[in-house]
Length: 131
Image 1 (cartoon, rainbow, N blue to C red):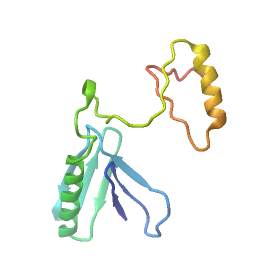
Image 2: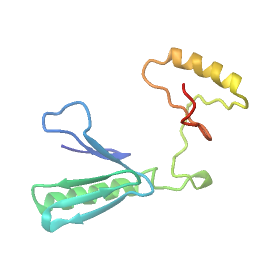
Image 3: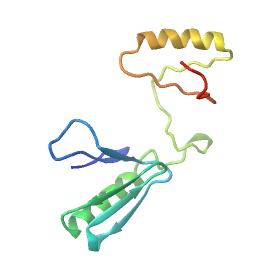
């Protein structure tokens, strides 16, 4: 099954498992190419490629048009402040830190309270720093 959302195109298996098997996010490198003779669409972004094969040419054409229209209206295609392709997000709790002591103290508290996941954004977060 092909799934088209405002931020990505994905697919899942026929039995409707609740997880996506593959996705292609809309980003500045997103491109769509079609081979209607083979009823295929080729999707590409900065990190991955996905080939979709459809039952017939019409189905491939309709999906290709819908994917293009969704991407063209996406926030991810537009340029934002500082030429970023990331749209501004509302209602996020963000804190700026100047030194490591306050950062690691707040990080430890946040990780202890987390229920699902924690996203850490940093100017440069070294992979050599073990959390």
